[in-house]
Length: 332
Image (tube, rainbow, N blue to C red; front, side):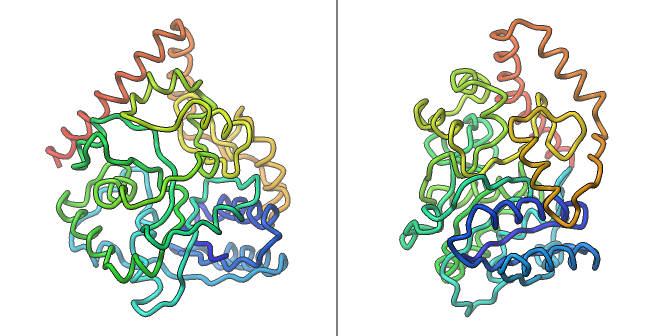
């Protein structure tokens, strides 16, 4: 199984936990990890390499391409690292003639809690890849040029058809899109993919990329909060919540991610246990920089009747957030 991660030094430890969890739940195969690194320290690279090799797997470090130079425009990534764009540049990373057929991309902020064998064995010959839908309103689609009936996927897990991606020059399509939007796309690379090729992905069960949203809201609340045009059925979603394969610790105003103090995520304890099995085990939790602000948001939300609070949060996310994004884009 060929697996790619991308990280800078700040996320190397968090990536290490995800990698460890993948190796523990996928003993059925040998894994070759391709780690796209953005100035990861020698110490952290040694820890990653030692951990992976000791588990009988392989690792190749690839330096992050100079994406800003390639694009010729200023990237406006806000809180994200440039590394987030790496998955778009497969030709740059592996070369035009590379013979790899499939590649599983995984975000660092994930915990693999079940085998990925069925996912890896999916036939994506006729697709760009396989992915899971993200719950997103029409206005978020509109600001990246997508239509209501277009797929909107979460790019935290992508099973990529590398041969088709390179053969069809998808990298050039993505570069053109980034330039069109002058280096600013909502949710960085996720906005790029959803504004160009999202309909060419095979859609798979949400259990392969179950985001924090699934634990902060019920299925019915999620429809109100995110206002998706379409998505998974209630049965599909609830079965995934009961039996996930990949838990994705996405940011949320209601939750704290497990590497920070005070996380109450249902999989926080398992994340910490896995962390303690890595070379970084025993380190204390990180401190959340905006903890006071997040506590204030959560307290305000919890002080309002739940039904009203969900609708208010939904209005802010579905309408106010994309409008602010447009205004900031015009300003910049």
